[in-house]
Image 1 (tube, rainbow, N blue to C red):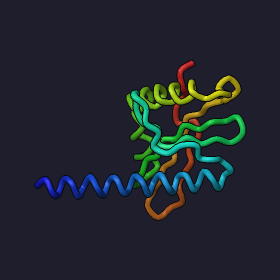
Image 2: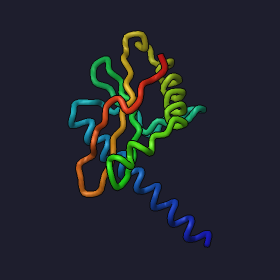
Image 3: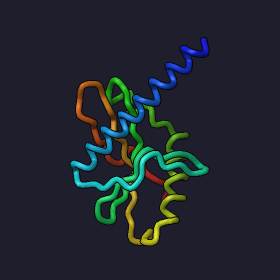
Length: 125
C-alpha cells in the first residue's frame, strides 16, 4: 500500500517538474526571463517567477486534462498563498518600486503547447 502511494507521489512530482519546464519554455519563447522556479517562502511556493522589462509574472502552473480544469484548480486559498509569497519576494527586490506585478497561469494540457492565461486573478489593491 505504501509503495503504491509513494509511486503515485513520485509520478505527480515528475509531472509537475515537466509541466513547469514546459511552462518556462513557453514563457521564454514569449520573451520572458525566468527568475525563479519553485520559489519557496514561509507563506507558500511560487511555481515560476518571470520578468520582461518592468513586468513581473507570478505564474501558477497547472497540468490538467482541459483548460477549464486547470483554471478551476486555482482556488481562493491558492490565490492568498501565492499573493503572500509574491509580496515577500517583491519586498526583497531592490527595484520593487518600479515593478508591475501580474498573476498568470500556464495550463499544461495533454498533447498541446502550454496555454498562457494572463491575469488569472487580481492581487490585493
